[in-house]
Image 1 (cartoon, helix red, strand yellow):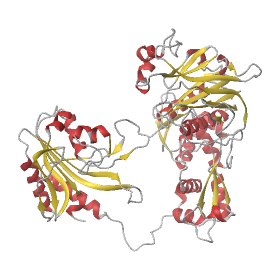
Image 2 (cartoon, rainbow, N blue to C red; image 1 turned 90 degrees about the horizontal axis):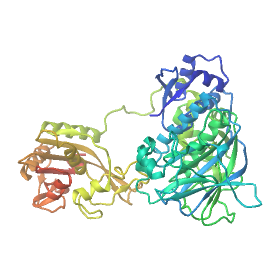
Image 3 (cartoon, rainbow, N blue to C red; image 1 turned 135 degrees about the vertical axis):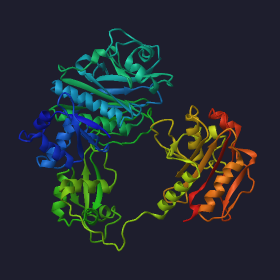
Image 4 (spheres, rainbow, N blue to C red; image 1 turned 90 degrees about the vertical axis):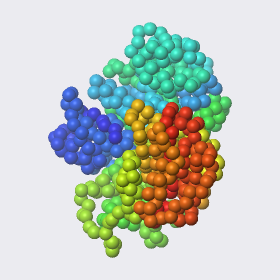
Length: 607
């Protein structure tokens, strides 16, 4: 969970409530979902909060939330933006892996030491969270005075900077915390920051680079140039963000702009001109209208940024009351929305009213406006959460639900628990592995081809934007996870008997979510004399404990040795496989001992 360091004196100043003591601030912030974690040696208060509210990664964002909570501010606030003077030109040499850019010009900001520290903290926290450690989005903040923009035309007073790609051993620049010029390749080899983030661009043929008229001044997502370093003397800033997704970097930019606007800064728009056009055809209009999507760059779009478009979502009055257990008047709900930094009006047309699936013909539906810095409002339940916090979750009265049953463990959970106990009794060590894995682990290392009709060979559920190349799909069977544990435990003593009862998933268009989830039982026995008979004996004992009939007719599977493999049939239905792992699988995992294994569907032991 993100932790933000906050100077209580600065928080009091930004909220306008100098009378608030530290303990009162802690209590108020706890009501907003920020939990006090302790103090730094410098006397800063540390608060932990849910990773959804990224607008609270700085003291400015926390102060904004408190001002709404206190009723000092109400509704949606959108900073005014001056007309653009700078254009970000994205040329055709930009690396395909990182094609998107956005930004803003900040004028008249007063950066004392505390404000600069807050800005740096916000930048790094956004990198670590929404930016996925700079892999998805990276922020560069520069002193605008040190930048000399290229003139767009001989008759134009506008300026431009260029986002492009360069050879690793191309132009040189002096990076931050350095006193000599380095090429991008030298930065990755010799600079401490460069070595830290070298993996982000290691596979690129050309590295991302940003130029002004004087030359290279930024090497995203790795490091900025020393020439444009920001200090407490800086009053005008250039904010640039590059990344793999336009929506993500646009929202990161919004959070930074709102934080600086809270310091009294003026926001000036920029134009982002992608290669292939320049004819003025715009996907982002001068009034803040944007496409908001991540189409391929190089299509000639011209966007105006920052994107301060206010989005709207609908929620019904009945659903708010049902979820919170409180009866509200319409004006109360609108007031609570406004105290959450949102705006709500009662929908007065049939089309808007029908957007809420739970709304009856006579039910009130609210059209709720969402400010540009809120990245977390994805569903009507997020709106209800804001209403509940503004009302005060501590003020909700507990009551028994209107149902005739009491809580208890689900039958599936009982079955899982009983199965784990039985496996432990059979000598297995119970494990709990990640549900996500990679194609290499699920297919290549298990000698399996995707799309084949056997256990582990189905259509995988892919992660659209994986955090790591190690976690790109949901696992379709449990055995790859157990064998990976064996690979990591080759330094430990044998025998190693491991088992897991866990989730597996595969694509299935016949299910409304298009993902079919199941629970599987799997076990491995790694020892110098492990055989098919050992695995089958454990399987027989397990089935006997649950009173089900087991049959093991011969079968074939690429992960197992032919002639030492059988299907698992329980009560006449084929539900899994048992056998000795193939030598190819053992070699792929650096295992030098034989491994016998089994896997089958948990439901076969009883519903």
